[in-house]
Amino acid sequence: MEHREYFNRRLHSLLGVVPIGLFVVQHLIINHFVVYGEESFNKAANFMASLPFVTALEIFVIYLPILFHAILGVYIAFNVPTYNNKSYGYFRNWMYTLQRITGIITLVFIAWHVYQTKVQVALGNVELDYNLMADILNQPFFFWFYIVSVIAIVFHLANGLWSFCVHWGIAQSPRAQQIVTYITVGVFFVVSYIGIRTIIEFTMGA
Image (cartoon, one colour):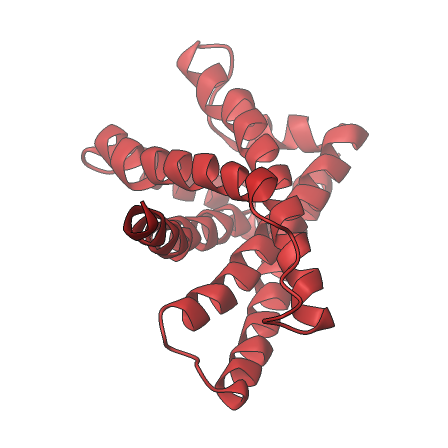
């Protein structure tokens, strides 16, 4: 039982970085093409949608890893003690707590975002293009919902990257962990900027 739990936690950490973390960054970068205009965004979105075996890639590289990560993450959030004062200091305990909160926000956002985009496209109600996202983000509620959610997702990714480095033995010493903290803070600000600028850009033509 202990061995299985250890394996699941390690796999949970790994999937959070590869492939989920890489997908999140790639998805935000593709969306960021909107800063170069509507046509650039549509070309980038169409390119991703026309990749060979795109459905299989989405199922096995995106949806199934996210599902496993989400289910185990929810279990951890509600069944594992939130605080770990004996192992980490005040700052890391806050990061641990925020990791659980942002995980729940991320799960809610992904479910709703997939419904607004993939499901609606599959039903033939909308087309996957600039106008779809512009229509969504020009609604004040969804604008702020996306802003808050993107910040939460990027925090979850950046802080999860720190945990990954620690749990996989990449950063063992306090010095190494401090360096990784600086790196992940940088990741948070850079990727958050990309995501927030993208959201704002979709509203500029309103």
